[in-house]
Length: 247
Image (cartoon, rainbow, N blue to C red; front, side):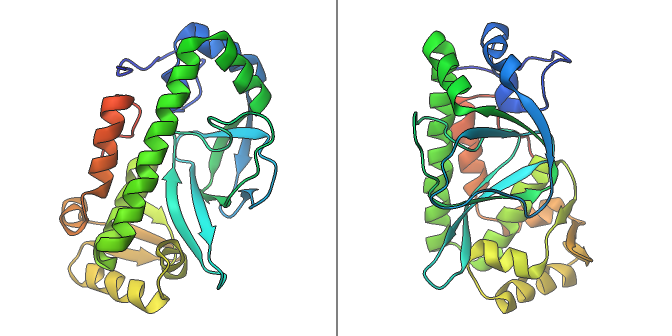
C-alpha cells in the first residue's frame, strides 16, 4: 500500500495517519473528531480502563506505552507520534487497557470514539485496511523494542530514544530529565547519567533544565542501534510516507 502522496488539504489535522486516508474515508470520521490539548504526564489510560476513545497525536505531540513491573518500575514499550494512534485500533466492543498510556511531549490531539472508528471500518474496506496496516506497524515497533531492550547497550538505546523523539517533534530539544530517561529504559538513573555525561563530553548534546539539546545529530546516530531505521523500513513497505522523516 503506497500512501506516499499524503493529503495536503488545509482541513486535515497534522496527523500523518489521518492524512493517509483518502478524502472519502476521512469524511466518514471527520464529524466525530474533536481536538484537545494535553500536557506532559497526562494519563490517557491506565491498566484495566475501558478504552472508549482513540487518540491521534498531532504535530510534535508524543505518547508512550508503559508497562509497570511488579516492583513498580515503568518501562516504555512503544513511542507514538503523528504517525500513529493510541486506543482501540483493531478491537471492537469492551477493550480494557493493558498498560499505562501517557503523554511524553505536550501538544494537540484529535480524538474519536471507538464506535465512530468501528462504524467507518464497517462502511469502508479501505478505511479498515489502513488501520489494520497501522496495527501491523505498531506490532513491529513492539517486536523491535523487545529485541532492542534485550541485546543493545544503554548507550545505543539512549541514542535511539532521543533520535526517535527528535524525528517526531522535529526539534533538536527533547524535553526529558535523566530520571525520566532511566524510567523509560527500565534502568537506574546512574546508568543513563553516565551515558549523558559521555555524550556531553564528546559534544554530542548538552543539557538544560528538564531537557536534552542535541548538538551533533550525526554523531548521535552513529552511537545508536538500527532499531529506529528497521521500524521505519517496515512502515515504508506497509504505510509508505506515514513514518516521520529523520530530523
